[in-house]
Image 1 (spheres, rainbow, N blue to C red):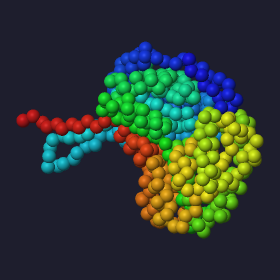
Image 2: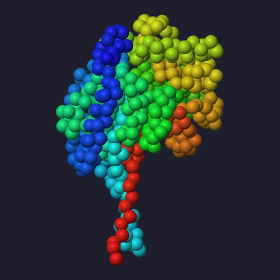
Image 3: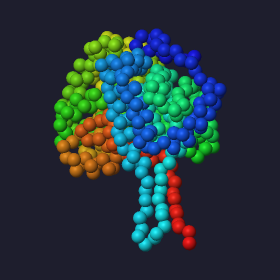
Image 4: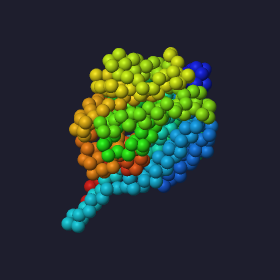
Length: 461
């Protein structure tokens, strides 16, 4: 059995049966049996099933929002937004499937042979999803994989097992054929057994760099697609011509929403020297307005981190930075709920920081941000690229041409201008360096859940 400990009060919120080798064998057998039937359906037929599948989840959005809050601590007033985002991404990917999966035809009037390339499903895929945005991370792989004709086995985090249960319930309600979508609650050892099995044809993982390495190591003897959406240390650069009020408002939210537990959340900010003092003053003033506490309370807009260990990791980063000369501008005493050795941690704004400090180079995944003054674009670019990660970066400016030119030099998967911590399903979601490999969302997301098959036909003579 697995117990989900709620960060709200440390109690056991949910207990699920942990699956083992026999369950893995049964799931793989059913998936292999279901694949021919599912893959032979038309895209239109699959779309009807998957639309019903998505709508079955949306119908229970209020109950699901409460479950999300209890499992991982996000304020209840914010949790319903995840289901809206889930539905938006799912419907977008369903809507573009016909075009994205269409044949590429070679047209050559001088050559009467018939030649074309099809996108075909890869088979049985495993989706391994995390707790921080449990629906938003999983939908990126699940819906396009199913729409492309694959069958899916979902392994969700032990922290959010009810998300997997909700998916399974929705699949049954939508009438998906047996074996097309299944869930397994697995520990690390059994997860490695699942994805290492020769009947698994693709793996899509979202999580830590360490987890991504473990997934790759489990696939060393297989040549299959492997998508890895890993960590981030996402920078923002507030340029000299930025709208100060807009930058402050959005970057505070980008740093502290979901208690900073977002792979594309803002973790470090570089501000042009002409705006630095005013920006820091505004950032600190807005941060002090946050209400940390029980996420079930209506006035709370900053909940606990997922676990005490996670909060203590961030505390150690903060302590190290302070020991090296950083200065904290938001007193922890302003947030009564913030207590040592609990998952409740107040937001921290650090200045006098530099890249010798872990808080500016290692992923924090918590409510802390460091702010540095820079003299020009060249200095900002050097610092933004001084990272093992490259998921997103945001530029805050009025000159779009200048931002485009700078954005092309940033080593990252997505460049934002005047926004952050956001996924547009029409754009490819990807990372560079230790932020992973592969693509989800957009038409290009379908490339990674399919393989190409060429046809070169010539009439007999």
